[in-house]
Length: 225
Image 1 (cartoon, rainbow, N blue to C red):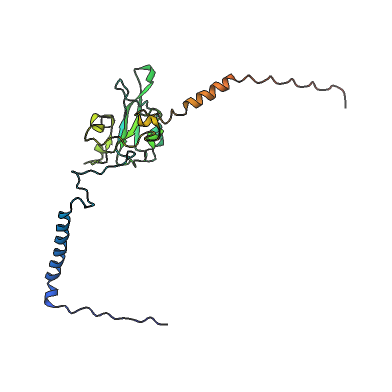
Image 2 (image 1 turned 135 degrees about the horizontal axis):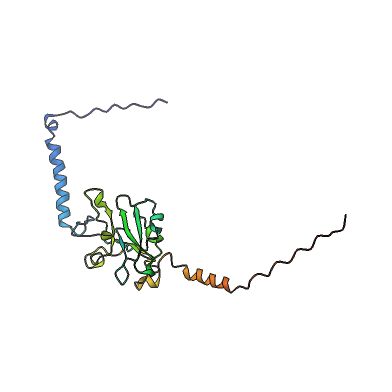
């Protein structure tokens, strides 16, 4: 069955329609009506008046990274390259050096993150065995060139402005909100969480009695067949 073809005839173009003045004024009237309605109900608008207003993001938001420090002010990072190895974007570069304190062994001479390549997946936080790298809620990252997008130790070291009043606050970090230690502000490093179990297993293996010596082989018979 052949489809029925319908021919549509456009409306007649009068001189008033051709100058588009009527349609322009109709569009402006609609826009002004929306503006007046929104001004009367500012609190009910879904729009956030940035930067005066900020959206409250989750405590596990993956924003700008920070490097945590010990009580003596040194970085917790021991330059083990775990975060660099786990990074799927290959945006982390670490250069290790021998730490003057023997107990710390190594420390990062250079620790850089290319923020233009980073995908903010949090794998570096999960891989760190020393709980040295966290993420914040800071998403306001802007750069004028590629060089300024590479954050080094001065930019990554945690500062009071990161968690103080008006700061972005902590974001994704080990065991956040999943254990009583997290609520108390004490976090177990991801890589060290299984060490007690490994140590207990090693002690159990050491307590096991040694295996019995193998039995001597029977001497071969010298009688002819």
